[in-house]
Length: 519
Image (tube, rainbow, N blue to C red; front, side, top):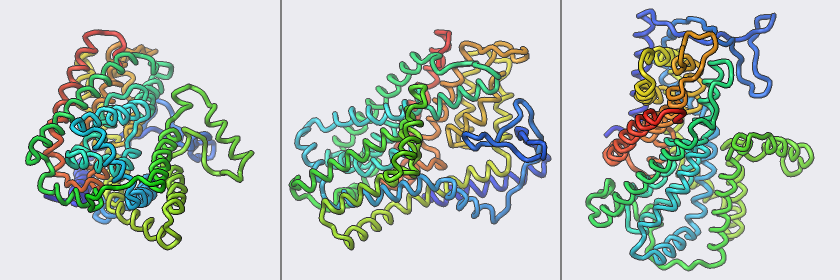
């Protein structure tokens, strides 16, 4: 089976070939016209720094062919684009190794398995519930990568396999993102795109929130049952495990090569407390509180701290305003504290910190390489070409059929634009007319089913694809941490994907039949 690197390079090379085919065929893409000042210089939004565009005005440009050297350059451009995630992972990898070497996680895992003796399978429920809530509310994705080194050893200690640990997090958070309720990276961004395309408040976040909650509960319940069934089957018969051939090696690697009884002394207990608090701070810090509460209080509070307490921080923004690169600093601080707690000394701390970062480097390489796909699509203008095709492909279909067709189209297009917020920003301004009662009306009016249903279809489609796409940094990063090759992963994940696909179609159809704002 080809490695993740080879698969991604082949995809990039094929896309480069496609750029030449489209260029020779004279294919063009429509790009939004940039706003310029009287000197012809492009204008930017003073708050976000994003370029400003003339609403509804597009320029036709030919597809830009890419070269052989671009196949390799795009990978490093991808690294540049994913720098925040990569720095975060290097920092968290170093932090986790210090925790692992303290054997505090081993001792905690032994305690849990003793407490749940015979009922270990029920530990899956609260874990998946936690990750799914984070996914549906905040779009937990890259942030989950730090949890695999916790969950996988727990599942192995409980008598399950590495794949169970992977499923708990991937499908826990994934079911939440797939069935997003108020996730700002999916729901809010898509609704904002529709409103931008219509030129007014076309649809609101509150439209169909109840149905989205119902869909989330159904998706989460199905996910938990499916993962528990898999865990029960492989514990009963380990040979049915997707990773049976590496089971002993996995135990050696993830359980720190020890079967001894670990004493949870004060150092290990303190390590566990710091470990837990650091992740709690990360989660609270990354949640977009201002977006959820419709306020600017947290942004203003962060600015006040920067101005009035620069001795604490003059650079790190307030809660809900920062990105993963800021969280990386939190993990560095926590790592230093753990160095003191565990008496590592300067030399011992530096060695463990460097070793931890080195362990996660292969994952970072995969994430940067996968981002190269998006670079080729964006720079060649193929991304805009696909978006244009989507916008004109569903006219003349009844509302229920329209949202189902959109769902089916959103799945492959999410491969083209793997970022959910980037996808929504690019696509949804063009869909306002498509999901309107009358696309030719002077003032567009949202069709109750198609308008809100398109949001749910996007959430389902994007969330589904990003559970297994080889261009997803989250998927490939998780596989790198779990040491599972992509072919083995596909073999194990396809029944779960089939479940999500069927459930998505059913929920879209049922919601459309109920009528009103379903998403």
